[in-house]
Length: 178
Picture 1 (cartoon, rainbow, N blue to C red):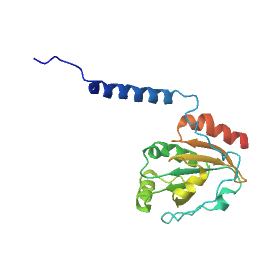
Picture 2 (tube, rainbow, N blue to C red; picture 1 turned 180 degrees about the vertical axis):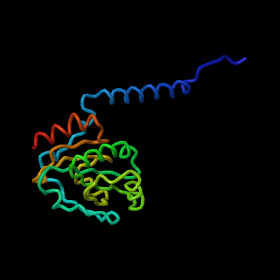
Picture 3 (cartoon, rainbow, N blue to C red; picture 1 turned 120 degrees about the vertical axis):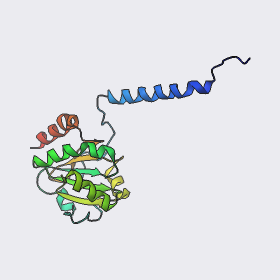
Picture 4 (tube, rainbow, N blue to C red; picture 1 turned 60 degrees about the vertical axis):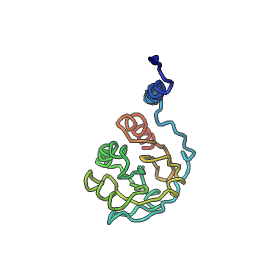
């Protein structure tokens, strides 16, 4: 009769699970969950290069340097966190804050379906590819930038624009400009 032995391979999945759970919990409890570095803060926003998205108004470099603050948001229809932040973008748009939507590596059909289904918070849009996103320092979608009247980047938020990020980071930065 064979002895009942525990194989080391049986222990591996629970250990991996516990390690991943610990990293997730640690990530949730960081002081600044948006602490990805950005070397562009205080610098001129890179040029906008892309294609028109459907029949929506096209974002241009002139929109980046237009009077007043504005938000630039990289998003995609295939991005789950973009759906999470979308109601918050709708609220910011209703407050009168211009939001430029940069649709990242997406099919125009899917992007338009996303906006038709959830609403369009963007005053201007552009369909963009990877090269332009790299110039902006985008790690992945969604990412949001606050831009001043001179076209300088004041703030960057990586990940979904949650109520907490809006309250603790975005709105204080907007108030500091006004």
